[in-house]
Length: 278
Image 1 (tube, rainbow, N blue to C red):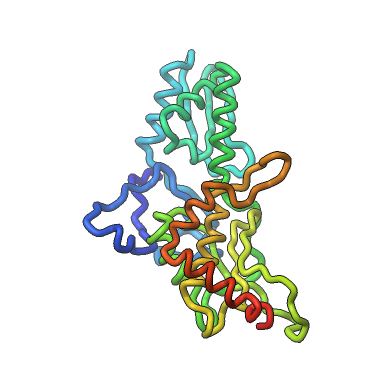
Image 2: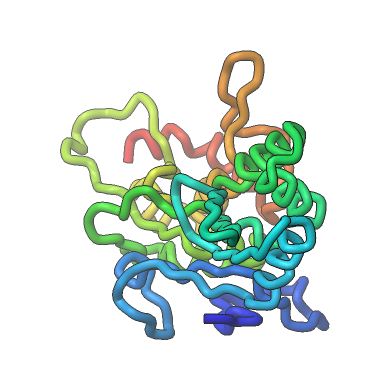
């Protein structure tokens, strides 16, 4: 099915959106699994699927056809493992590429053409680097286990998620569900440490510690924790000197865009002991 722009915008754009025209949809959009992340519009119950901009698909197909020795057929996929495949059937080159390549910059698409046609090692490296930097666009390996709980006694994570998508993330991470984590089974045992939020890479799921669902925890701080974890989906960890840096420079830069960043950091430092006791 071809679609020029995904018709559902899950959140307002905030103050920065004033006077702007509607943003054109991506070249390929994944529709979240309605069993995991319900939407205000109904789709088939079979799970995640994609809508592809047919014009963008044809443009990439023409790039391939212009240099291939014979006819080319291009298919866009939502595969988890194989991002690019090619087969030759009866003189026709059949190419399957992950949806991330449909809206890629021209130099990446040219490298993709080189890679598919076997023209040089540098193109393979460039395509590989692009896949690594867009790993967050590959759908989850596992579905979240158990029911998701977004509405707490005090704070509504879903409302905060939608606000973050519109204000800071420009719709990025729209398909990442959020939930409150499990409550403590032995609340009488004092904590020595606490993880206020986690991002599960396999499930593409953000969990927020239920200790934050308290009247004395400000809404902006819960939003900050949620924003921090959503950034883990968008900015992958990097290897530096034999170790993994989960908060590289780009992560820190984007984290500081949060309007109440300094306030949230200060609040955590002041109230950490109380969070450990809660």
